[in-house]
Every structure is written in structure tokens, then in C-alpha cells.
Length: 387
Figure 1 (cartoon, rainbow, N blue to C red):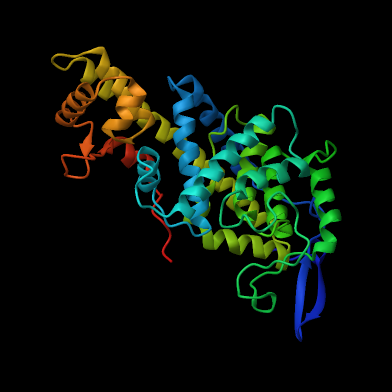
Figure 2 (spheres, rainbow, N blue to C red):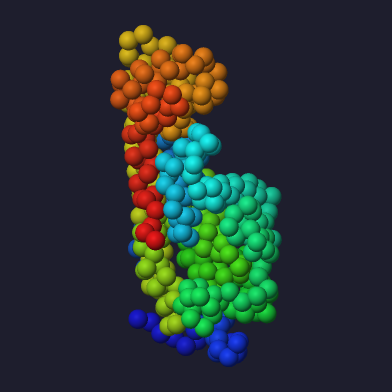
């Protein structure tokens, strides 16, 4: 394990209610002495991103892939923070808002989707900056369980990670009086052309530093993960936001927290960077494989539909709908496909026989149909974390 005192920050200690509190103040970036990193792993991560970026030339409809991928990312990132809803529950609610599901969970995921889309669009007019972070944070936290914790504003009070109070916390971020300088230094580092570091290495440093500063009262984890994707797009490593690390971080959350804490305690940036680059490789390869699998599935089922007896164009219209809404209802299909209810019901029955749709309720009224094969691909890794 690397340990270098010049990479380790300072502690601000004070007494609150008779309890000694030590808040950590990190040194500015880049780390000194300069970091060492695995060049082969960096090249592997860069190549994986390049292949992933090429999916826009593979998929016939990247908009559809992005929509579902962003929805999955929103759910995964929210699950890391405690959301218990599944992807099927979220999509069921979208199909039928009368379903009795945890509205707080649904709103948190919905706000995350709004924040992602806002951030990507905002990149067209504003570079990633403290201002953009506040704007995205406001979108992220509005109408959620954290809406009372000053959405869009950097904190003016002490926060902590783990434990019931700062004195029992696993980690206490910098005191609010230090935020202005720390965040200013972080913004400067983002745009410092004189820092000759590979872009992926720089992004890994920015994410870890943001998580250590923890500048908001709530939502830092979600915004920090989203920041990775925004930086990849802003630095032209991806043309579209195809890569999100939440599944990797959810699966390896103990190692993730361990590496962040090791930076603070021992200055071990190298282990964190290797962990981060490995996540880029695994996530990019998974996303590319998912895109290829979805493409093959859609082509197989489109062919099955078009070669079925008594094929009609309306069947393709309904199929386009269920690709966008893999959990749907006859009412939703009728409204969005602009077809009559008898026609929709007849087509849904045909799709059941073709093995494309599955009716999930067993009822004759208020039926719900699922595009099961597609859902199985999308749902990989989306099971809620145990409480």
C-alpha cells in the first residue's frame, strides 16, 4: 500500500456538544508526488470506450437504447442510496400510474432521469463547472426525499458519512468554511490545460475529490456518479452518454468505499485509479454486449412478426411501442399507437402466441403485458440491495 504524507490532507478538529469532531480537508489536485498508473490498463479502458462509442453505428435507434439505459442507470444509482424499487416496478408505474408503488422511489428515479438529460443538454451551452453542478443538483433533488436539504446550493453546515452523528461517522467531509476554496481548486483542475494527465485519469481524480469534498447536504453520490458520464461526454470520449458506472459501483461498493477512504488515509491514489479504469473496461464491454444483444433480439422478433400469418402494418406499430414500453397495457397501446382497442387486444394475443409478449396479471380486465425477453436483458443487476 502506498503511503505518502504529502498526499494526505489535514484535519480540522472542534468540539460539538462535548464531542470531538475531526473533519478532513483534502490537498488540491493533482496529487504530489505525481501518480503512477498502469499504462496498459489505461489503453484497455480507452479502447473499450472507443468500441462502445461505435454503437451509434450499430443500433438502428440509439435514442431508444439511450432512453432505456438512462432509466436503468437512474434506478441503479438510486438503489445505491437505498431505493428499493425494481426496474419492472418502475416501468409498470410508467405504464399505469394507478399502481400502488413507493412514490418516493419513483420520484427519485424520475428526478435522476431529469437531471441526466438536463446535464447532457446543458453541456451544449455551458462547460462543466460549479454552476452546472448546482443546476443539476437542483433537478436531481427536486420533489424527492432530499428536497428539504437545499437543492442546488452548496452546504453551509457540517455533513458526515455513516453513523448517526459526526462523532460516530465513518468519514467527516470538510467543514463548510473550507468549501469555497476546495471547490474553486477542483473547478480550476477540471479546466487546467497545463495538467498533462490522460483524460480518464483526470476524471478518476475529479470524481474521488468531489466525493471527499461532499459539497451538498444530500445527493452527492448520485451527482458524483453522474459527473463521470458528463465528463466523458464533455471530453469527447463518448458522443452520447452510453456509459454509467453505477452497476459496477453497486456490485463492488465495499471496494469502492475502501478505495476512497484509502486515498484520504494513506494517499493511495494508484489503487483507486486501477479500480476506476477496471470499472470503465467492464462497464463499456457490458454496455456494448447489451446493445448487440438487444439489436439481435429486435431483429429476430421483427422478422418473426413480419413472417407471421395475416401480418399487418399495425403489428409493427405495436412492436415499436413495446420496444419503448416493455411493460404496457391495452389502454396505453391504444392511445400511443392510435389503434382501436379490439385491434390492440388482437395483436397482443398474436404476440403472446409468438412468444414476444406475456400477460402478467392473469386477469381478463386491467391486463398488463410484458416484453419479457427484453426486460430480462435490461434487468440484469437491477435487483434492489438488501436492507
